[in-house]
Image: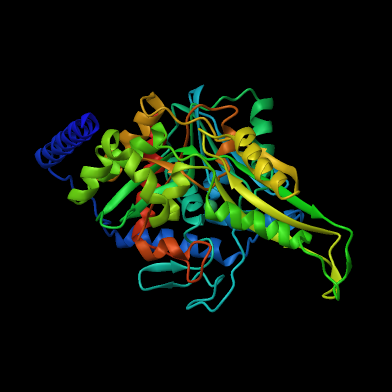
Length: 478
Ligand SMILES: [Zn+2]
């Protein structure tokens, strides 16, 4: 009898808490994003033409291949498009990676504006050739137009225009662009090493990552500045299962491939990685859900109550949401024997992990190793680094970015954003506390799919905001 009272009391408390959350949500009306892209045909024409020339140069990067010559060709195009930048700034080129220094009145609070020059390969049938740089239907088309030559054009053009006005920045400005971002190469490291050699400690680094995104979550309308404040870590593990091999005409059970398969099956049946709403993820959901329909505001605006429930249901609804809550494991490469009639002496499986702060490389790899041991599988760590320290959203550097977004894109909500992918900015974390991942370029929903996919394009109207953003960052960093 006592237990029945206890259950009823617990239910009553729960109901009361839900009621409090509902009342709280009803009494806080939904917010609305007020910013819409505006057109400025004259400037768009100039910027689109420049971006088009940049897209026409094929700058696909491949892992482990030295392609300096190709990138030097791209630099020639930059030189033609941005003559003042090349005449007035100090240029350093290291293996195809670029660094420009614009001396300001002070070197105390230098700012680094950066994005990569390289692009991923273009496959499939495109409406406009991937390296055509066609300007049609108010867009620039081609590989790199969205990821991320639009942004490179933005900061080069910003400096070009300020130089034309005779402007001298209060603080030093660096333009940084690696040619190995898409292959996770070390191009950016070389630029950071160079800055370390010069004792430069940036006050703010602005890289790609987040952007101005239309409808970042289903049901949330309008545009949002998704400002990347945290980047997950990454690792590759190689799993090997061994046997004595033999002829395929009399196979035994539990061959290496069977053991690896059982491992994958076990993992997928019950993902053992810890689910948690980290502080940055909470901040992100809290700020974005304020613009959503009632159920978003109720659930994500009251994570103190609904967090445990959401942890249970989110992973089965959305892999993107699951990636924000735990270390992810992707099975990406496999090998067996060399012939169809030979049992493998060794079969391997390579897995790619993206580490969450609450379960870093050491702990996540140990979870994998434990499950692998159950199936007599060896684990080798090929590489592993943890999540980058988050940007403090109460810092002056973050407030500067917030202020500039408000100035250049009036009415555009700023939402802290947790990145599940990686960018070059992580290399700068060693010398800078405020590495912000935000390209000030507006992407519509369909344009997000074009990046790394087919028919990549960007609206010409998105380019003016990028130029204005970088000008404002330079001018406001006093
Ligand atoms: Zn990119």
